[in-house]
Image (tube, one colour):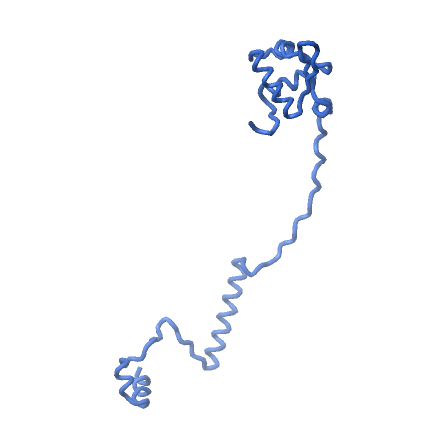
Amino acid sequence: MSGKRLSSGRAAALRQILALMPDGATAAELKIAGNLEASHKVISCTLVGMRRTKQVTVEMNGVRGIWKLTPEMQRQYSQPPQAPAPPRRQLSPIPHRSSGAVVSPDQKEIERLQLADEIAAFEAAGGVIEVLGNTPLRPLMSRRAANQGSHADRMAAREMD
């Protein structure tokens, strides 16, 4: 059984009926007043469960038990509905900050043009740009030939490339 008070079902109906009867009522009176289709035993078991969770109290009047809401429950049912929440104040938007991770297309075009100008100035000054994708990673000589030959032979083989 859940410890949470449910807002629907037999217990909720009994709480609403008892809220209308501040002097309390017997299980039979609650059944008639609430037009409940459950048996007297089922209603009594529900009331006993509500007593364990401190929702109702019982006062014995001879053989009959008079069931009443606890003072805490009476306060909950007697309180007027809550007023609507005050409107939330509007916050001013945060100014947009440029970030290195987000670059606009215009900024990319400006950087591309600046890089093209720098490359043109470098080549005009006599610089040579080597394309790394076409650079051989190994010398043309095999390892054995490189180990057997002299340093001069290796340098000569490199210059031939």
